Image (tube, rainbow, N blue to C red; front, side, top):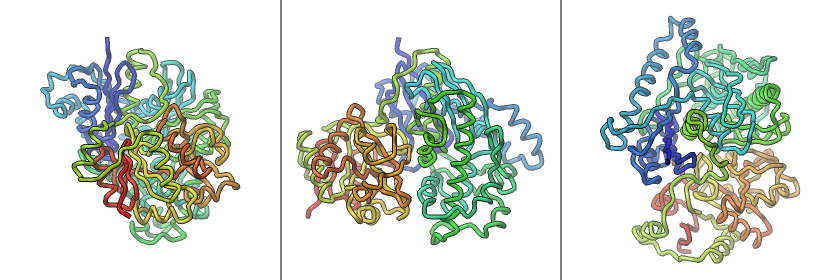
Amino acid sequence: MTTYVLGLNAFHADAAAVLLCDGQVVGALAEERLSRVKHCGGFPTLALRRVLEMGGISIRDVEHIAVARDAKANLRRKLGFALRNLPRIGRLARQRLEQRSRLRDVAACVARACGVHPAEVKARLHFVEHHLCHAASAYFSSDFDRAAIATIDGFGDFASTALLVGEGNRLEVLERVHFPHSLGILYTAFCQFIGFDRYGDEGKVMGLAPYGEPRYRELLGDCLRLHEDGLFELGLDYFRHHRDGVDYQAEDGEPPRVAPLYSKSLEAKLGPPRRRGDALASRERDLARSLQERLEDAYVHVLNRLHRLTSSESLCLAGGVALNAVANGKVFETTPFRQLVVHPAATDDGTAFGAAYYVHCCELGKPRPEPLRNAYLGDEFSAQELAAALEARKLEALRIEDEQLYASVAEALAEGKIVGWYQGRMEWGPRALGHRSILAHPGRPGMKDRLNARVKHRESFRPFAPSILEERTGDYFSATQPSPFMTQVYTTRPERREELCAVDHVDHTARLQTVARDSAPRFHALLRAFEERTGIPLLLNTSFNENEPIVRTPEEAIDCYLRTGMDLLVLGNFVVRKPA
């Protein structure tokens, strides 16, 4: 008998829905891709409806709903913290009560989203602890029979870090770091101080770090102390979340907002924070560098502790901090781990995935799913739908068969054209991996500035990423293993940097995607065609968007193409060119 499990990340940033059928992923969607609001919070109404449509089922067919939150988790820790902070705990208590009330209403929210009476939602509800969801998302996506697992983020269910071991269908928590101590809060607090105060801006600070010097290392050492046992604690005087609570809002259809997490003590040390939009000074660049280096110190410290606990050479990572691709790229050189899997949606959208996997594998005892070979788990539109979208915009398009298409697009890229490349199923997670991508020549001087001026309109210090034929990776980068989800940064080889000038960051690194023929055949074929024309087996690959969520539908792709400076749009086998 077929078993459907619906996973939800709800009432939090990066709301998402994932549908499993007998353990296999039917669809995985973040709410932001449908609402068009970045990091959209609240309840994933649109994503829930869409994954059910993708499965051709109704909510009445779903037997299990897995919610990525458990209000009862770490309850003793919560009560202890509350008792120690009674005079100022009011806001925190209200937030927790509101959260619990929302969780009790999940079935009603599901019914409302699906347009049915609550009595028609027959599924059994499962509430899964936040970090177990992160752990399940990475471990059950891997092909490891046994692995060490680290989940590191701001916090969820009162924990910020969990160290686990996975074996077969079982996850065992070995250690946790609890609120208020958190690597994610450390990083976000300094991002806010530096002036990158929007939710999800941490990646910008990671990109800024190589432009600075680590002259604030001593201060960061006071802010984050590493214990001999392999764990850590924050210097809480520099933060306010433990006193005032985290003023965090993630309402339906709204971008999340987090009030400043740093305290007046940090301002006393550093002066006033930078305001968004002000020029970046050496202080901000140096803070970014010092912050990144201290995070890497802690990352290595924690992972080496995990290795001592598990003796495994296989590592799975998830949680928002696991999107720090620079830290991930140093795992093999600074720890004993020799195999690494990072879930493609490492942030909280991925907890919907993990909640569903956890229920399937750990609670229902079903066989483990096939390893996740690619992240193409979202929407797909037929050739007829692509043609209809072009016709509705009155755009002339040439339909070309595959081999000629790859040759034609590769030729345009070799000439320096900027191409919007829209193919197959949309990616799951924050990275464009060759299905909703903007592509360009990686070795053209000035291409980075051209892309920023004509298409992306983003900060000039942020690097662009390369996608490379998996079999050629070692010729261009220091990577020793595949990186299919663009989750690791590696050093570029000195003799290749001229060919990589548009994707070679200031410190000669790149966050790369390795492209295998069996997981991304069309993108692999395009890369091969580009290599045949240029001798370069990679392309500059950035997300198909302009300061918005990555495009989902052909209509969104067309609109983005028309309002930006892309030269070519490729929708499936349809090619649209702007007049010369």
